[in-house]
Amino acid sequence: MRSKSFEGMACSIAGVLDAVGDRWAVLILRDLSLGLSKYEDLRKSTDVTHATLSDRLKHLEENELIERRRYQSRPDRYEYLLTRKGGDIILVLQALAQVGDKWAITGDAGPPLKFINGNSGRPVKLALVDIKSGEMVRLRDVRPQAGPGADELVRWRVATFDQR
Image (cartoon, rainbow, N blue to C red; front, side, top):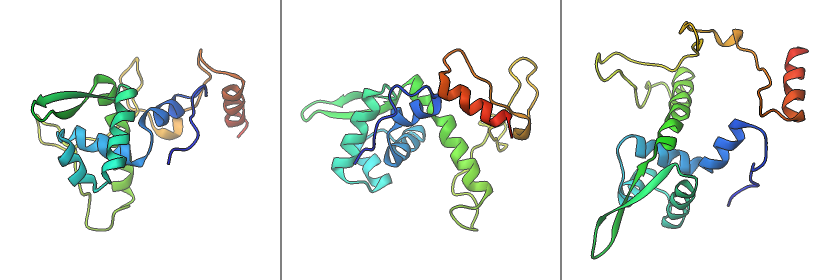
């Protein structure tokens, strides 16, 4: 069951959460990023019900995170592929994996999945980078600032942060 929409909220995070939908959709996006594209493969990987999988695929397609492409006729069969917009969501998934691995969320056996540089084979991680200089920035040095799309609620949040 879906909760209330974040539509109209001046928050990029809420917008992404609204476009993704829920935890099942996150797992579907994970699988698509790993190259699974067929309905039955997505079903096997997530163990989600048919109704839920169909609903989440439609939601992701409506939000232009995936596209449905027919790969067989008689009977018609479709595969699901990430769009460019959906591909950018993978950064969110990698961030979730990175936090889960750091804090051993799934147990002490180690990370269930690693991300590596395909050229060097070395592990990679997400990091904060200064846009102009390219230098890494520590999380504790990051501050929020109201942007051009900020409304009064966003400005209040920033002011509250500044008062800490």
